[in-house]
Amino acid sequence: MASLTASATPFVVVRPKWYRDGQVVRRRTVTFLQRAFTYIVLIDIAFVFLVPICYILATSLKTSQDLSDPTIVWIPSGFFWINYPLAFFSMAYVKSLTNSLYISLGSAVGQTISCAFVGYGFARIRFPGRDALFALVLFTFLVPPQTIIVPLFILYKNLGWINTYNPFVIPSFFGHGLKGALFVVVFRQFFKTLPWELEEAARIDGASAFGTWWRIMVPLAMPAVVVVFLFSVVWHWNDFFEPFIYLNRMEYFTLPMRLSVLSPSLDTATGGQASELFNEALVMAAVFLVILPPLSIYLFTQRFFVESIDRTGLVE
Amino acid sequence: MKVAVARREVDQLVPEPRRRRMSLTTQRMFEGYFFVSPWIVGFLVFLLWPLFQSLFLSFNELQATSLTDLKWKGIDNYKEAFVIDARFLPKLWQTLRNNLLDVPVIMIFSLFSAILANQKIKGVIGFRAVFFLPLVIGSAQVIKQLFAQGVGGATLTQGVNIQELVFEYIGPDAAAGVSDLLNRLLFVLWKTGVQMLIFLAGLNSVSPVLYEAARVDGATDWDRFWKVTLPLLSPVILVNLVYTIVDSFTDTFNSVLEYIQMTAFAGGFRLGYAAALGWIYFVVVFVVLFLVVRVTNRYVFYAGDRSG
Image 1 (cartoon, helix red, strand yellow):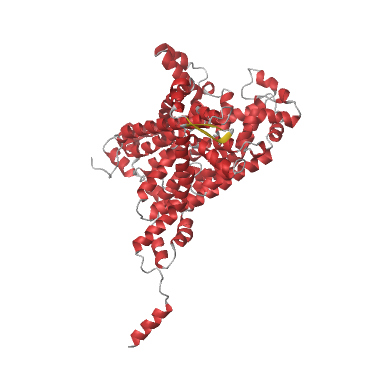
Image 2 (cartoon, rainbow over the protein chains, first blue to last red):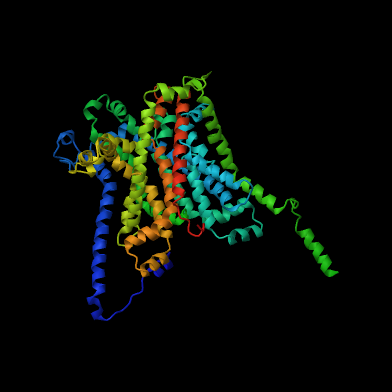
């Protein structure tokens, strides 16, 4: 990486001072204007992504008078914190957070291991029917989950998996689950970029195929492992469609699912006072509490997201 | 003589591998199947079998209340979807139209922001981090709540009445589509995270040598975008296009999918009919994808791969 940036830096040409009168000075103004323009557009785009978050934060601190006052849009008249504890308790925050963690961490671990395993097979080992099988992997990506949801529901119901986390975690260990095909592709592309020598050396020294994968290739694939794990966690965290089908008892609800039953659960939490307390501000406080965990993980791991595809060599 | 003895001793020390007979190719073949076997098992159990079963169910009547009570209906479910059901076709049409509007917006916006985020200027890493925020917190439920509160086009187009302008200059039909898009614009733009990542990687893989050569030949930045960046990026654009189409058609924030879910689980409990709707939707998505790939592939430039 370092050598790449170094080679991309243009040579510094020292010119006599008079040379600046003509061409060079004009060019410099243009680049300054260009740069200013670039920043303005970058800020504009950033605005698109920051506005909803600002809106969530601002609204969550409003009183009900503020909400009905059209002059108050962004800055509430005071910090009205009470919505946060209310949302916290009516969502059964700790319980739902644990549920969300079970699903996203369990599935992410499963998908990372299994997709690395399968992706290695597709990337490095030649066997009859490999390309046809890989075409099937791409095909699975195209099937909308809604098309197969009914038989899956029946299958899981017969297995007694409804209201458990098995429908999410078990398919992940087979390289399926939410966007599993995509992760297989990511690992395949990554393993394809690695040099053959280490692997061959390991095989000549008598390592088994599994041993080579586990001891040599997986440690080398750490960048891809991190990326797949993080994406898997985030996508499972935000997933909504499947949890809503397989989990229908409130004590198993994930955090985002809780948003849809906010009003009735507030009613039970406060003993029937929801009609007075429930308003937009409370909903936004709840929304903020829901996005808080992924947001805080993102603050520490954003480097991996930003660099992810560079690191995995997905585009080659 | 001595050598022979040593040879024999070595032979005794090294145990004969038991599976000597198997050729290396066969061995590699088994290894290959060993590695992909979990996926194949998963494919059979969690995809292929459900897919066929769903096709079978779509010709039957099945209530969620009693899962064993199957009744053969032939193509009645499909007939119902196209002829009797007054809600399905409009929803399907609406989804198709929305996605046809959304996909280009997502593609252009993400390419545009990826190019900007690829500039070598100070603080660009910070901007990138902001651009990928929706990827992390763009949960369907969160978006639904925001949408319900009207955080849509209004916050973006404050003061400019675009809908009226379009109505005046282009016509009422276009105005309806545009206003619909504007209302969803913020959320459409919020679906650009992955696309932006893929474009960024694609932009990084374009060799700086080509830009240098174009510059020497007197190409402006504008020329270089159209003549160098875009052709070299075209395979990435195709990948992104497919991803975007699949992603928007499987998005939960989508009236057909909501309707299927409702038919099957919330209120309707008509599993057979829901399976039929699911299959119709799948075929529609597949046809759209096929057409798009077929048409786009003609314009894709594979550097070095193809001669013509």
